[in-house]
Image (cartoon, rainbow, N blue to C red):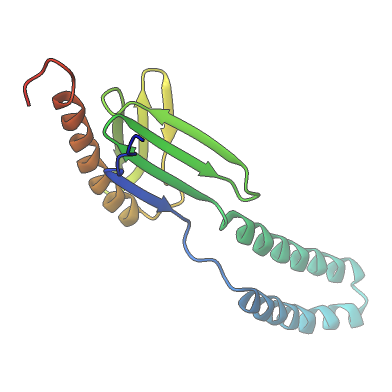
Length: 168
């Protein structure tokens, strides 16, 4: 039986915390009350189209909160072994997609803005490019990029020293 080597690096990236269902109910209730007061005033004056538009605004806010909740279910699982890098992207509805790279053939590209804040992390291998952790804050991207870059260099070093015919 062949032992499966432990990964050199493993991380699960998730978006910032989502609001709880109770918090969403509180926000929706508060917005409803705050929009109902002027809405009733406008309605009593006879400006029905304005009241209808305020109702559409309320529906847009509720829809935005629901979409935000759904997007919060995304995650990315990054696992690095000496000979393989695997990224599993899990979408908001649970759909999976994978990207596999060889650590010796992939480059970690860290994009920065004019203030040197990390704005993006991309993995490039030939023509293939995958963005990692797009939903992370700049500080989280910088921290992940530093840790992952160190592990990627270690994987490359182990891959080179473990090739047959090479001295260790």
